[in-house]
Length: 414
Image 1 (tube, rainbow, N blue to C red):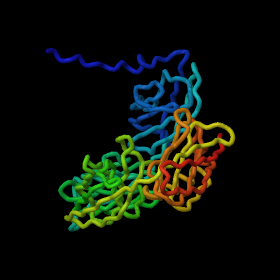
Image 2: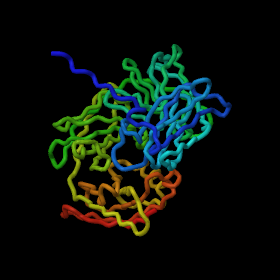
Image 3: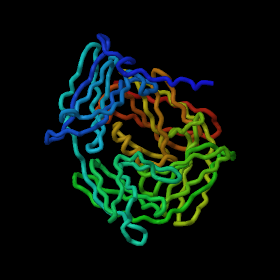
Image 4: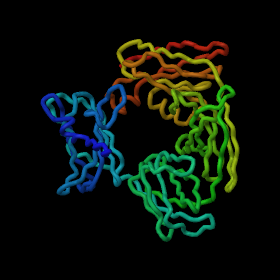
């Protein structure tokens, strides 16, 4: 039998041809000294409800190369709408542009966009005995992620240590950063928090042997499918290792640096990861070359049904945060910053695209007193506008013995 013919995706120009009913975005990148990056990636995406994928004409993600010393980019064949553009590169900080409207038949030239080279981090990686460690992978980012065996190579910047253990990372952000190193045979360093600011940085990372953590997750007394995360105590959500349970509720981290972790089990929703579904957290202290056991039971509880009510204006998206106990936030920016410091057992976020649904359901909320905060936004609003959007917070009492409980949340539209 002959092998099936491979299908070739038609070129972008054929799938999304430019014409009088489409729009074009173009621009170029340069540093303050008028030099340009040799390669970079640009994305352009239209604000709308629903899933975006790279085959959509209004969702573009392309790599560009400088020619003749000029780093230019262009997106043609765009359906009209409100677009956001982001630029990524290995030697500059990500650049997010505020959303802007695009009309059919029009071209928007963004001109020369000046890039920020960011900060530099120089350091050394040492073995547990204090000797220089060569060939070790170093990761730095505002957030570090890993699985049960290793740090994931999705950090903003990575480097490999040289023969003397030294490494250099460039184009780092000016906010708080975490840096860590690991090698399969030498172990992993604890994640080190670096200060925010404009100055370049230095750090010494010491590798050490790792320990294991295993256990079982149950829900209402039965094995549960869940994501289990281990976060070094004090790091908030900035450093996170995640594994999934099997069908018997079992989980296992094979390699974690020896320190104290906040371990959280978050139930799957519709057989998928969901940060809005119930969570249960405990602490575990790991010792090198040892295995610790920790079981987590996620309790059942009522479902809280939240109905947003717009008091005036209009909105496309409503975002809510349910927080155990007392909590305050005046603006969307304050809400984001404050919620980032809360553990996932205490805080439950969710959102609704109002064109798709008008209620938000939070399942298995333990009975008690909560603060419910919400904010209404529109597609295409700038980051600054969203950050300044007023937040409404109200006290909510979840009672035991009632399977579904309704709450109405009054929010101003835009």
